[in-house]
Amino acid sequence: MQIAGKNIVLTGATSGIGSALLRELLKRDCTITAASRRAESLDIEHPKLLKKRCDVSKREDIDELFSFAVQQMGTVDIFIANAGFAFYESLQNPDWAHIQSIIDTDLISVIYAAQKLKALKGSQPFSLMITASAMSWLSIPGYALYSAAKAGLRGFADAYRHELSPGQHLQMVYPIAVNTQFFHEAGSRKPWPSQSPEHVARRMVKGLQNGKNHIYPSRLFLLARMIFPFLLRGYVLLEHRKFLAQFREGP
Ligand SMILES: NC(=O)c1ccc[n+]([C@@H]2O[C@H](COP(=O)([O-])OP(=O)(O)OC[C@H]3O[C@@H](n4cnc5c(N)ncnc54)[C@H](OP(=O)(O)O)[C@@H]3O)[C@@H](O)[C@H]2O)c1
Image (cartoon, rainbow, N blue to C red):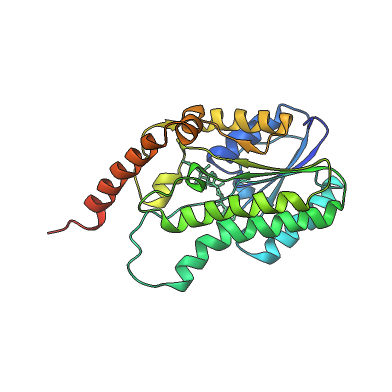
């Protein structure tokens, strides 16, 4: 899909991958509604940039985001569901609200936005791009809820794609670790290897242009997943040790 002239909604635009992607997209003559809880404090000004405060974990905020985007831009051609967060933790105590907080933001909000976009567009073309994660494929110790949410997105996308009309794309992005606030917010240290948000953003733009269903910013990860899965099993073992050191070995 050509990006110039398109009307785009981007969630999670205030930092990290979303912020880098916003800067890349603004070079391409499109109109963007940037949405997140702190959208109004976004330090980028551009005549084709609109800012909308939105907590994606709230259904009414997503409804409002779509109404705002249609009112201000006329329609939505591309929706990029990028907002998300993780917990790095040991799941010791059953806690419904805790589970729901991450599933609402990382999984349900995206499914709901997909349905809203489809309802808005009918059989007209659109692109829905979802920032999933390498953890959609590879569950890492300490990230059980996050891994569940991101694997859930992949399951949803692979089935929902069959309900779309010709010209409608549902694109999944699977970044490995990225140098953003993400790990700090999650309560963990950034693992090795990692990539820059700018690199991931460029791969996402390329993905929008070529319409591929699956986008892997790290080719090494794709190669390991397809051909050398033992490398990934080794990685999980190392993470398992790290997890035990942090959560199980105490005085
Ligand atoms: N960093 C990584 O290693 C990595 C790897 C794979 C996938 N990802 C995925 O990439 C996406 C972006 O993460 P990042 O690395 O750029 O992290 P980040 O720097 O922490 O950015 C997260 C973004 O999501 C927004 N956000 C969080 N909760 C929200 C909510 N309830 N409603 C609206 N916006 C919300 C935040 O904005 P506000 O605080 O203003 O709401 C922020 O703009 C996430 O989906 C994450 O799961 C990250």
